[in-house]
Image (cartoon, rainbow over all chains, first blue to last red; front, side, top):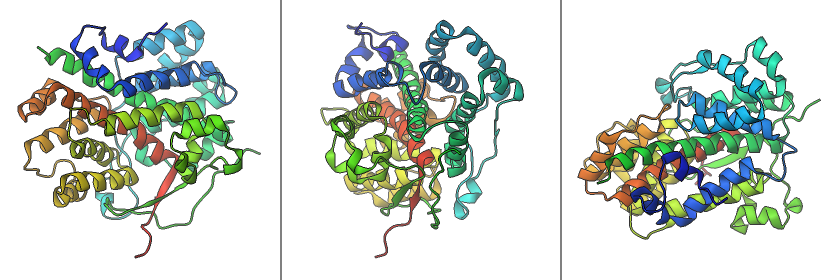
Length: 195
Length: 202
């Protein structure tokens, strides 16, 4: 029951050095887990369904090429193998590296970096529906080119059937995973360097 | 007809700055009169009900509350580990890399305040994360934060060794990791739910 997902993803338990480091920031540890629970064990899924959450989560961490993808892949496979299959088929054309994107016009324009602007194929939209397809496009934007975010991007979500509250949850979900995957990446490297 | 975003006709800031920027939401924050006990629990600090950013996020109160408590322990728990200035430096470095002008402004200001090294922070904002930094701990903290912010992450044992040879212990290294990782959460919310507005006229 009291599984800590980040400990599990790093592969540490009580007695390990990285476990001990995390216990020195007890509220951060407890609330990283509470965040996971708030997103994946919510008592209110009226604005974002459990399947949508799992599909978006897997898409986000798979795009980021994170080892945490295995965890979310298993969750999605248990909920909807068809959805997982559709996402896996779409993945090769969507994966790239970031961050890239544009700055507001001015001196920073010199730092603009081009990159893939991904949108769902007609096949993917047909398989998953417009609402989830819109969320996948937004997840791609948040993952690789957050500085390209815009009011238009949010309008596309509203037009795709997302409510304002649903967009908040979707945004938190993708953003939290970008935190979690980096804690796992960083602490996994640190674990290998501890004597 | 679906709901409509809120569009602002403002000259959005276009340089990284330590000035105090504003921020406007593209979606409707929850009206004050609709805040319940559970919403206030999510806000953690009641004063945040005055912020459009937090009053938008509070539409999903549980994740906001957990987010804020994670944030507070990473940046404000002063039991050992990384000095406060360098925690803010990790936040600023991630924000400079992702391109979050608002987050960078807040945390650059905090980094300057705690370090008294306004010029070094300003150089990071003006010339970027690769700009020279004389302090080896600052150099290592910036390098590690940038590497961790890349997608896929580029943080390796080289970063850990650089942090360690600059004199940081394991808890401080874990703090660098958490500071940069957390801003990959915060930057994405700040960048995608609204936009910064210019500093108030002096």
